[in-house]
Image (cartoon, rainbow, N blue to C red; front, side):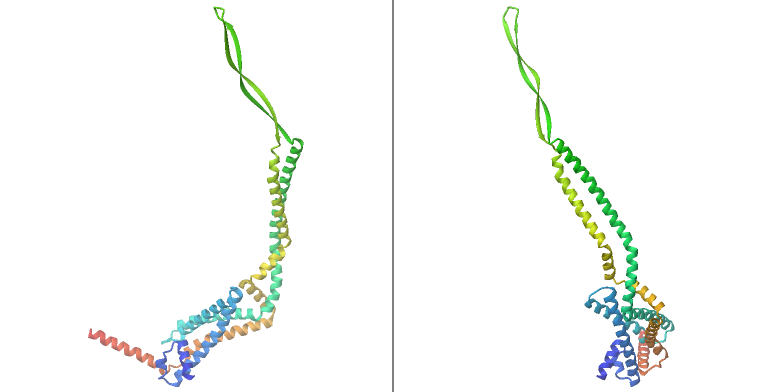
Length: 329
């Protein structure tokens, strides 16, 4: 069990187990100390990653677990930047300190949003009501304008139908006069110079007038006009229902979308009004900041162990070999 813990610590911190197993207990305790700190940070940031993905990205539990793994991997890699330093680098440690402050700030915000979830939900009710009062009049005006336009179309179509219907009632049948030109033979007789009578036939165009009655063609316009009127009526009813349910629709839409920024504003409002909430937030911030800076401060002030000496000795030996090979070449 002891060796398994050491192996896991080497995996997390980047230490070489083959070298560490031959080192003193001091070096092994150093690895255990770093391992404990990284496990605590991994658990906290895994919880933060899962909660953030579940609540604000609205993903399933499987994808939330992926987010947890991603957060843990990032934390481990960031901590390794400090732990695996072979020489002290003040700039890197200062930069890591700045990252620690930002991570503690973000982590404490997300954790407090989880802790104060019920209080945030209560504040969110008023927040949503304020948003509804801001959104509803604008959307209601748009719906009402659409209804008014549809009603105007309905009145126009109904007037057209009434006019057509009156015309049909006055003139159910339309008289159509057709003029046809038919050639009519005309025979003329004429005596020639010898006294003989000659007959000559010629054709004269004679117009013929035909009067017929046909149903009023406006009758064919009634059916499509009725269809348009019914369609407009359905749209008016649909828009009316939409307007009647608009407030509930907006409320459902706002409640179904949990916005990170919205809840952040609500939480800051809660912190500004509640001293106990502010104290809890500060406690979490300082706790996370302390955990984040633990590895940095530990690395900054620790004395080199025999593991560090062996690593340095290996490097110096390799450098000497390379110089010898370079001189021989």
